Image (tube, rainbow, N blue to C red; front, side):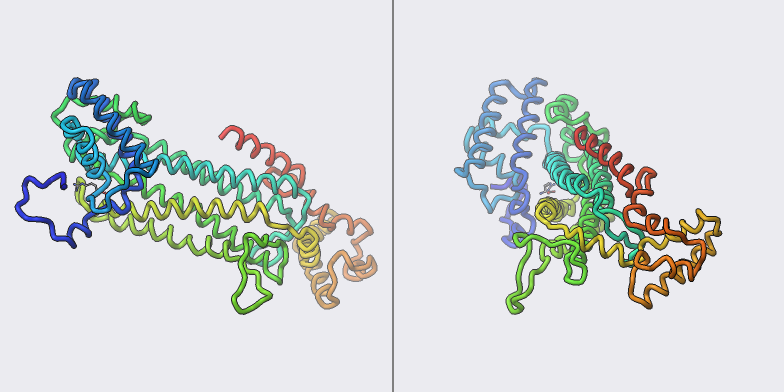
Length: 458
Ligand code: ARG
């Protein structure tokens, strides 16, 4: 049964019905649809638009539908047009006449705008919680590795020594911003569109403040045309989700490199790796690769909705139904990726010795050797050239700077003394970097404290 059959004299073409119908995907927010309807009739009764008796009957009917869907005894009909029609139709079957009053002062346009907002709000809360769990795992690894030295890279070339805590700390900051973005979006979108009707409000004395309060919105939206056609919050959300995926993808890329035979900085646990059907020796980082790969599909959702929205005149147009599948897919993808990524780093083994010797053998202390000369009165530009010579000498002999004898140092420049060894040890190089944000333990411990507090408070 259609909600709009009265004006029609012919049956809908079957292909048209299938093309138009959204039940296969919008059934995902049956809970939000029912919650919205309960708030709507509660408001209608408070305003005297609906009798209390009818309200009770409708609310009981809606609750029974919700229960039965949840316990599996009511199956959502796949031939219904959409979840709104299905719920209303089922309600009328269950409670009769009163059910026919549910849609008073409401359109599917403001109804779907509401459902999508309620759903998005719930998902933002969930994604936020998952990010928090991931950040706790990152923080734990940071706490355990403030003295695990490794090379820091620029251009994927060894640059200066850092610590594993410092490297992970960079991602902690990224995810912190990601959560902040989600909080911002929640705040901006949290106004209730219900009561906007099809586009121009309604003639009933609705109390939109009350409906907004019942559904925990900050208040009602202020323009009914905008209310039914605003999908900005989805664009913002998909943009924030794309950024989360970009961060996860960069992290995955690093883990894939670190897990390679050439690097061996980390070893992904067997339980998070897969094998090859032909090469018996292989243990592949498929999960990290898949997360990196799925980033493209979340970006795709963002571009897709931006393109869909760009030519739509006010107010509601059916194009907007296209917001759902791609948003649902992006949201589910991001949730899955955050959880799997967290499990992967929780179980990953760090090869501290390998990381440390990589830092030692990559001339990551060359800047510190130049600083040593500067501290002994040599101008920086000259110091840079002298250390360049040292590096060339070491490359030729296949040794690290620290492996040179003092005589060898002195042969290149007489300023070098015994204390050069201490000045360019990995520990010194890192430990001397104590300004806030730098990898030195003293600075790192402060940041870890700040981050701990952040997780307690947010
Ligand atoms: N399934 C529709 C959507 O997702 C619901 C709104 C239908 N409104 C309408 N005027 N046909 O957008």
